[in-house]
Image: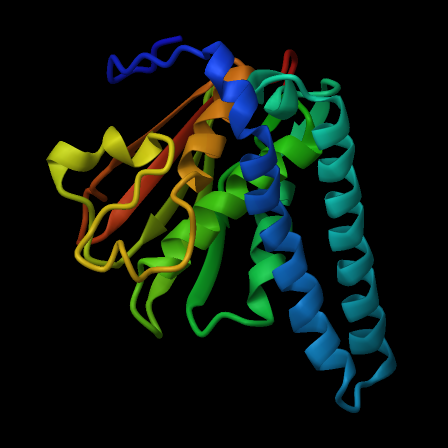
Length: 236
């Protein structure tokens, strides 16, 4: 499948060998959420904060359970990350949900700016996974105290979701490489945590939904902008 920038990605049989690595990588996200909320629950809390911490922890546990189910069933990366069901999903609500998973632990300013509901047909958990990976990547590459913004915009045919940061940016020659398997770019690549497959997973999920994802420089400043384009849900 090709995206608007001419990139082409084909799945091969060798991808089946990567499934355990992909799942292990994705489990780290909800485990981080659970760990953060356990730290919060160890402190005195009002009833509302206590309920929120428990709810987010339970949601993260369900994500781990779903990922482990995928590991048992999957025979290749495409099967593992393809939508299990197609239902209306609001990208605006999903954006706010994804940001909440980082709000307890991040020192960055995390903003959500939506001009529409952004309804698409997709798998809620898979699309959440893609946004989570993009936010995690943006926060990891943005200096402490920086800003990460998630935007949702729409037209009659598509929903465009952008994750923007004000970090150092990505050199033009690397904007396609960042989506490769096990790609870890930059001078600190050897010491930076991670396996370098988070963005590869993002592309797999979005292409399985009939969309595309690419990276570009923001038009009005430094940093990086990852752009997801998905077909708008009929009648939205």
